[in-house]
Length: 381
Ligand SMILES: Cc1ncc(COP(=O)(O)O)c(C=O)c1O
Image 1: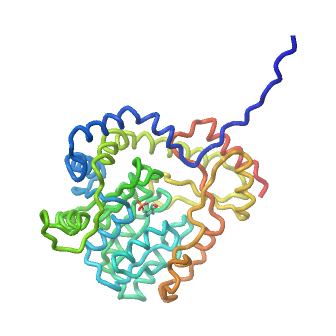
Image 2: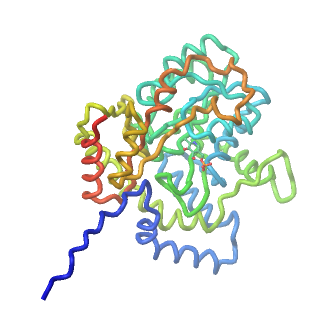
Image 3: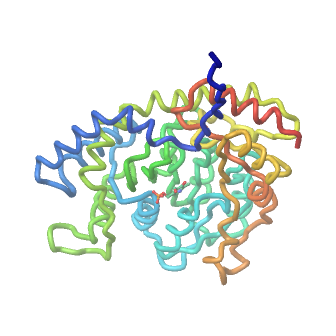
């Protein structure tokens, strides 16, 4: 009897994120959390948000946490807590999610930029020089990009020397430390995001502002809720930026408890990529000194990015770009004063032209990690 023809199935595509695998792991706890919220009859700003805020604050090591609707809002609210006035200049990085600069603009400020360092993060030497030359700049929004922590000691020294008001953008770096100090603890205001792709991603949008200051905590609570001090008493022109009870309950019961294991897996994968990707045509940017990174992304630099991306695609590996356009180059920034560029953006432009993000989500199995490594090593750049 003739045997059936052998059918070869191509290995499954390796996705940049795997929300279905996440759901399989959290389903039971998440459904129970949703059920509890539904049964409680209380859907906005209740016990679930309070419990999650307390849990995240404790874990982060900051006394206060204010749940918000997004990371974007958390940065805006943070800047408003620090007294940003219309037109105030805010130093930040040109290589980040557009939300970083958008938050500054929505708070009434004007973002100004210096170049990035070899890791792709704000260059603190250039920041120092720019602050010397531009004493009017009193606000800083450093971004702990890719899950790396910017050097805490350097940030603290800049803050002290120039009396800066600082909101740290920790959207990509929850749990990262610099010489043991958690991100977000230098400025005293840490903004983070629970957008699904983030290391602590929820089932929709969400964010939080963490702070050491009881005063900022109270103001942020008011600003996220139309600027109310008490029901129907409005001291400020606030936002509607409330983390809802369902997201808070799922974060608290299902996602936050899984964060340590997910971070450990990201670190394992990063260690393998760093040890095993041995292609002279690919450059792996260095980790900032002192950073215990949480590897939200794994950037590599490919001189011919299009060819590398085509190669990865043919090998069934999904890749990303973070970020292909610099913030000051965006169409929405048209008309931004060229004087907002406080240094040439040479390295940032090189990242924008050449960076490729390899998959590093915590649901990758070892065979998938090996396939990514093999695909990288097989590329003839
Ligand atoms: C560095 C950075 N800052 C801010 C944000 C904004 O967060 P959200 O999408 O929750 O508004 C993001 C996420 O997109 C981000 O990656």
